Length: 102
Image (cartoon, rainbow, N blue to C red):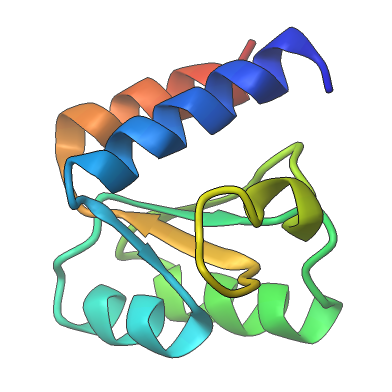
């Protein structure tokens, strides 16, 4: 795992501990539609269909980015596997986004 990836994983862990990380397609989609999300993140191994549907849902509403992390690496954050994540707080979303642009 690269340092950017471990930094992003650490930032996501911080979001989870703060209660500002959602995961799972349905929960994230619902929160996006309600305007409760600052950033949507997809695992790099998310299916093409899942990624396209989530990008369509987020279009014009919130940024939707692909992370350099696999579902297996992200499994450390969640009790069950997920490929779609959302950060619900703007400052934490910026922190995560900074790791995506490095």
